[in-house]
Every structure is written in C-alpha cells, then in structure tokens.
Image (tube, rainbow, N blue to C red; front, side, top):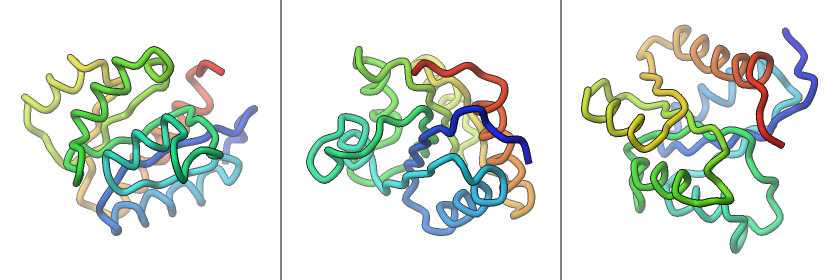
Length: 145
C-alpha cells in the first residue's frame, strides 16, 4: 500500500449498487486515508459539489468518479455543469462507465473530462482499475487545493 502524503476526498457518482460496493471495496483495500463519498444521481452530485441542502457541510471533493448513465440528471450534463462552473472546473473528473461508444468518449473529452475509463466486467479487473485511478490521482498527480 502506498501512503498518500495528503488524503483526498473522492466523490463517486454511481447509481448501480454493485458498482458502488466494488468501488468502496477497492478504496478500502488500497488507501484507508482517502474518503469516498457516494451519491446516486446527477442532481445529488451537483448539490454535493455545490455544498447545497443536506450537503452543506460536506468537504469539497478533490476528485470525481462519474458514471454517464444516471437518473434525474445524466452524467454528461453533470460533467458539462462541473466544467462550466468557475468554482468547480479545476476538480478532476474521471468518467467511469460501461459505455465504450466512441461518441461518449469523444463527447466526454470535449466536455473536458480528465480521463475516460470503461468499467471492466470482471470483478478483479474492476477492483484493479479503481485502485489504479486512486493511485494515479493520489500519488502521481498534483491536485489543486
């Protein structure tokens, strides 16, 4: 396990309970210092990021893991709102989705996603991918504070 010099706050925006569980498990086994927050739809994601309503006291995330296919507000809309907001645009957003469609990949990067990762179907590969994302953004990349 690689220790992060500074624990980071990660927001997972995911509506699939199985994928939430896998992501939580990957984080728990990789770096216990990092905090993973979970919301289940795009509207909750924006309220969390803007620290509104029930999320008024939450910390600002250092990294967002964003599914594209979400209820209430689509992940593409969430990504666009994040990157269009002066207060939020510096937060790195990793699209973590099942879609391998070229148009989704292109649109995500056109909306300034920091990375696009297709979720593996295999359990062990999924855990490995989440750990690599976490490791990269915690130990390799310098995040704005």
